[in-house]
Length: 286
Length: 138
Image: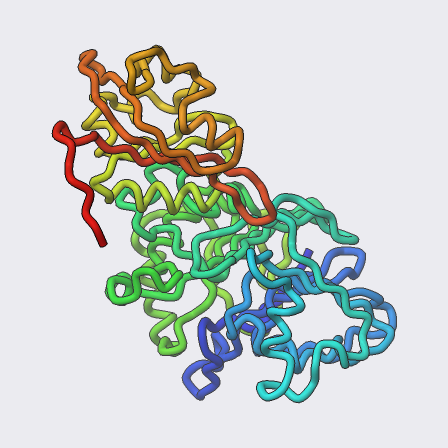
């Protein structure tokens, strides 16, 4: 299983000279399994770089964690949706009100977007992701709601003997005075326990967090502590704050790494890089 | 280890800050959380006890109807909210750890999650005033 980061930025696309290394596109991770199956985690602006899947790919699964704009912004520019022979399955969190089609159509319809969902030429199938474990063609997926404003899922993928957990927007410390004292009372913990690769929200610094409590995100230090407690193989901090440039992120991650002797490998998410799983820890590729 | 449903996690965090006594049970009928206000009223340290099955409530709290007759487990508002999946409000008597009676009113609600999954139930309860109060007209 290989995970490629096409968008690592949180909240807002942030392309500028100072963000070229970590990247300016919003959340999108491509996961490819050994048999060539493709799963995409979120459809932020990074998804636009995935234009053509080739004739050998008949199906693509897009797993949306939630429908905040930075996670669906790229959908209208996702080349697969315009390939008539391609089957595209989009999975998203269930809601107590509208189904996934109705909610996505709020964006993919005029006046916000010129093309409607119903006009897309691909074979589009929309699914409310079940809470629990379900099977995709080459992976077992476990979805569960996590702490973030609005219905938001975290995903745990198992394929090729490897495990990956993706929780890009997550505030498990919200209101928890004894954060991590009781893992069973920690949002998302069972999704991430023992995984080979954890891709997790690390938007804020400790200094920034008090002004953003309840916004649904974690600090870098909270994420490091979570990864340590969950016994993950590799941590990829993700959803970088739009105001944090490459120099600052280098410094923040360097300081976080020096805080203690962490038991996991540390590989901050950088746009365009690939991590190969199946061995422990994850290996960074090109 | 299996983490609790996020709805229970968030409720626990909210209830821990409320001055109103409150209890959370999971779908299996286990008391998974009792807030500090509840523990103060009942004199029971649930955290030390760990998860307690609802079936132990009769021996722990000696619940009774407001006329003093014993209340069966299935008639506890929390039990009814859990099994009938509808809110319940009921005046009743419970006894704290020292055996002292408390006349309370309890409101229990089922916790239905996304897709109709039953996550558990929760209740709030408060002591009735000793003196009857005149109703306040709107």
